[in-house]
Picture 1 (spheres, rainbow over the protein chains, first blue to last red):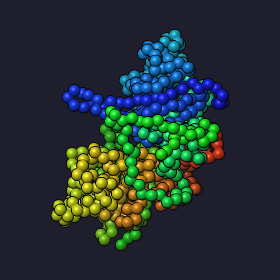
Picture 2: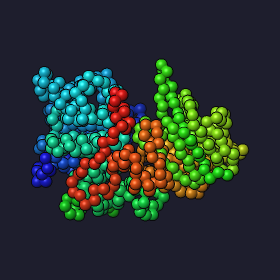
Picture 3: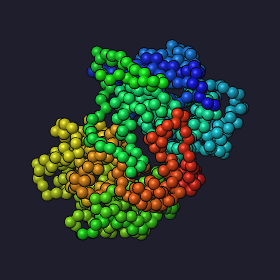
Picture 4: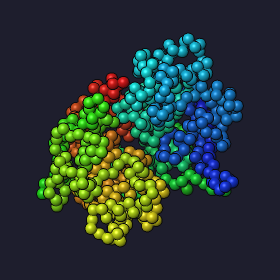
Length: 312
Length: 298
């Protein structure tokens, strides 16, 4: 299913902000806040992959977790298919998010070791009662085949599988509820490179077949370049540059994007690496005092929806 | 003096399991490292690359490793050749940290959390050099500056948990270089770090290698990192070396099907130049790899 550029966005996020309180003292008062996600806005169209990239602590994972409801948004709206998830009751939200599924980095810790793989994949379908109980097993077997595993894997336990196979199992589980969107949080980072390539191919095949939207959260610029239609670069809780993948990679505008791309090792020993300065600078902390006011970031459009935060 | 710092011939490493079963982690691996040179051993999880590196320091002994055959000869600068596999552990304690030292993937687990950063480096110097504590402290302080730790005086008196991952790795490097070793073994030293920090650490290792004139055995799974640091590359698969060559040969004219598949699977920045839509990886299904072997075992 080719990507329809004129389609209405499936997910529309406006001004999303997530803070974590740091408490201290015997009264447990809030003494400071981690500004994990600070006023970010973006959208994802049906069948589109938006990659969210940045380094540790930039807020990319918190963004994903807030979207799916694992963290509570401090402010902002999350419109999924037109309805605002932040205003919903827990019950309504639970029903709504069956169409949004998440896959995590570590396939070892996201599968129950005492449950057969088949049961793990079937569980969400039973909880949400999406089909008659008798049909579930056949459906699970179909899903196993879809992600490149076999029907007789149904009765096996997670420890019998390699990392790549486990991640395929997690993908099968996420597909069980026929989601329209998948949030993949560093879903290929723990895998060996040949397995990583196969799982990335699988994501693309599934996207083509089901027209899935994908929020692909990653620190790996080279993987992101391969998989995404659009890219959002995060730094210290904010999106500093966002646009079509080709525009962002070919012509990075923000100084942080340039630095990030410049730091990626090039898999070619004869590549011209230019002069690299010996730097020691680190990413500043996102912990802020209570009286900190973040200020608003302004963006300029450099063409074709390529947005760049203005730097002072 | 031999111009080879390290010579490994037909190394076999076995780990005995229960019921007489044995994991043959390394099977007949040979390679050498010249003075001042960087050799990268690459391979995926379970290929035996770390076990090979640990054998050079005899650290596998603590995991009850057996060496049924093979020879490892280490020739430090200004010293007699050392027959590593036949040396006793107390002799190896003098060798480790002095002639050969190692940095690991996770600096937090390699540093002692209850000792100050500065003391941990001072301790290493006092272990191997006949110097007073004051002198050792002074040398450790110089090393903190050598590895470019900002505010080195303050960091010297802090504990490892007060440092970021990149700074901890710098402390590890300071400790590893404290006795100016002839060979530095770096086992995935940047894998846990962010990419901008990784670039800093790689640059630092290269620069210090030049200053000290040491050789580096670099263990990594990241072909991008290999291309950045290596003079020569050995590719390992399932305990065997399947290909060896200069970095240029391995990257531009890989001969073994596994090396070719490995390179095909590496996401390369810039590979999508001029393309609007995402694209799948080509030819990444490898037959007879560890992945398949692991799957077959399951």
